[in-house]
Length: 596
Image (cartoon, rainbow, N blue to C red; front, side, top):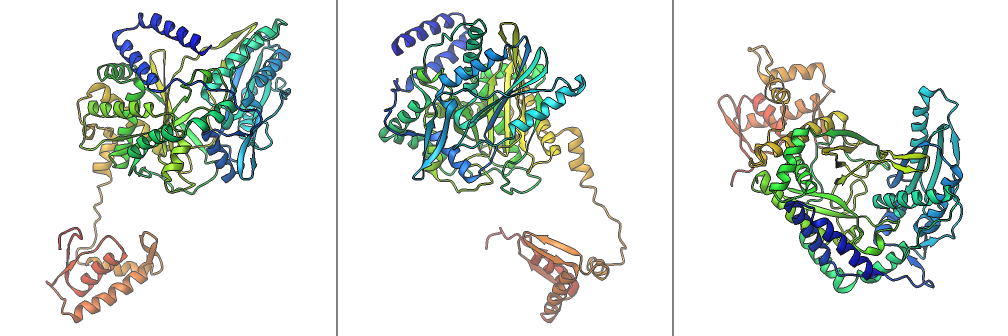
């Protein structure tokens, strides 16, 4: 059966290849070469008498759930808008049959002797509560529906007791419904959503006509994949993957110095907010032209733009960013529901102030190599590299980039259409995430940010700077990244003029230390200096400066005496400056970085 599917796929690829442009054929050949690097595998069914282990990806989410019980960070919730004549009985039957067909949807996770295992329950009917809000005034129904969707999305899952799939049907009118499906990521991913929609839609159509489902049984289930993965990813296969990633991420920076408005607190379920991005049409066209001339993909081009932005913001030239891959390079996994998605760390070095084209070349090289070694689960990589554990920050990267080719088309079923709505996360998994998409010739997306760390104004400014980088890439890809002008005229005026307008008129007959002593007399207990964790009042600062002044005078310091000061910025440095002035001397600043 596998060989027949391979032959069919090759025939389909050959037919489609003839219709592509030269550039598109090159991209297709590149993807085929990547797929050939992975040896063909046939995933067998697992031994039924053994316990069902978790996949490596599942094990990581299970571990995180043990650390933070009740976390909703990995809830996946999608509202489907159903317009037309809904057969509620057929809808429920189609959901139940989909659950029967895919073991993942009836799996829970328990710990036996400290080791988690999958428990697959027998197929049973799923609850489909119906909440009728059609009695509300028409102008209020949408708001009520959105409130109910948020409440359903923010309910935590119990991995041990389940269920890990919840459904609720909101009735807004006779021909207007919203089906909310909430799942935990440990049994589901974005690809799974397409599988679920396809299977449930086909089953609904047959059930609505009074016919049984015609879908064939799946060749394997997710637990078969997890069992096989544990046996396959060992020995030489594992060492080959680990060897690449050890070399690639050696000395990778543990975090980026981003402009946080507040420090990390390690809060559970930090609030997520989003800011939308819409790339102007002429910029999108320029980016597509650049993508073609640089022999990259639009994914690589947009990833490069994000890494340039992070480099400008952090002052670093070593930029690691996470990005997801489907993790379904085996034919048997294409039609399955489960948690296959993997995360790759794309570490791009932007040293030597490269041009935009050079950045694209570097990103292309790193991405292609990473995709070649995408079989190593991120959880296994973290286990191997053992980065410093910090519950307030993710390991290896804190910024995520995703890109999708989205063609939003409603699903047409007998007597109705089903639209797939976007569901925003209420919890931030990362400090910053950029989700970009391309559809109908447009490029658009959004920044999702941890609202515990960033103010909205900071992200608004970041989005403006990101748009400036995209425009620079489209307009002049031969400029160096240091030459990209990200500041607007107003920002430049604020930085160079407004914030530097620090002139203050003061009595010329009074010296600086005398003005300071006047403030000491007025507010002796007020806070004068903060340096790291150290704080000092005006009175204490004056007292310490007086002590130093007396000591300096005993050494002969007076008018016209120059006193060298070689210190880092600190409370002691300010004490030294005022002490010298009080003694009547003049201080001479010496850079501690000067050679001995």
